[in-house]
Length: 426
Image 1 (cartoon, helix red, strand yellow):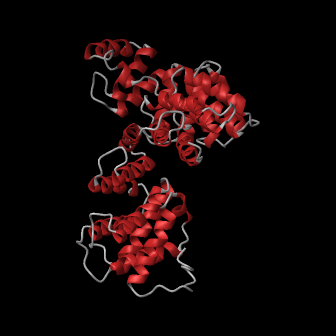
Image 2: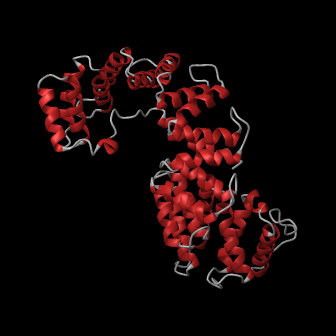
Image 3: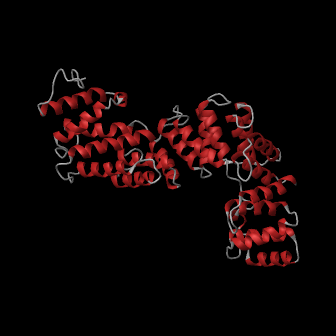
């Protein structure tokens, strides 16, 4: 995985995660605890003025645990506990203001409540305050203050704060850049099971950031994160298996990880999975599934609708269903599809059409006479004139490609030794 493109894609997602903090109580983990009986016991204590019980009752309403979900009532109970100075409730109330759940969104009020809880030493609220300063939510941006608050929470062993602090050190945000220190904080967070810290450690070992490059260790950390459901890690682990970086090359396993990431909506994985189905790499070749995943990727802006139209026209053309008279338009759109693929995947996307064309010209493909010479001519000349150097990366394809062009032009009576594009057929 020597290409840094995957790192840039994943870092963008990781940077987004910088803004995410953990909920006060995980609904999934606590679901068995919050039975209807527990809720009623909690309500009795809350009615008597117990701040902790009031906060817990707010959690019940907020997550729909043992009772119907009701964000407005959650806010009510958080506020009663918060006004008694109960830090977890103050932090939860701040999150309601920040998200607009159960109350009008107000980042300024959110920051105020986070601050009240943070000043009491509540680590989760300290993380929230750090994020507010980092992104200017309810307060003026101040990267140095963000680092100060991240550090307060990180020293209390808050994994998300440790991850954010590591990211600040890696990128020099609010603190002098120190990749070694970044790795130290990532390790602390990763040791607690933080999937984003594990992902970043994978990148550090892949690229040699703060540590010696080590593809095997990169795979180990990508796997830890991927097994927790991190889509970016799943995509990158798939790439490791595709390329044989740090692990034995395995197209089937690679496709499996791409699919896991794609099913979570990770656009690059959706595009990659579409390519797998197009070529039959690690999966059965399936044009329908190829289109399905390309459509999903396109809906996120990875591929344009125009390129998708080109894909459909390509399939129709190959199957002999396309109406005559639109050959040039169709072929140029197909080429556009290949260029869209090339932006997000490996060079297979750039080469796919040319391979199909050459197979038709040389009689290697079952498609046979479906793609006529005039259609091939437009595709070949258009692709050649773009001077796509990726064609030369495939053994034997460079010569085959020139041979295909020669055959097409010769058949059409258009071959010319002095052609400025073709030269001597090279």
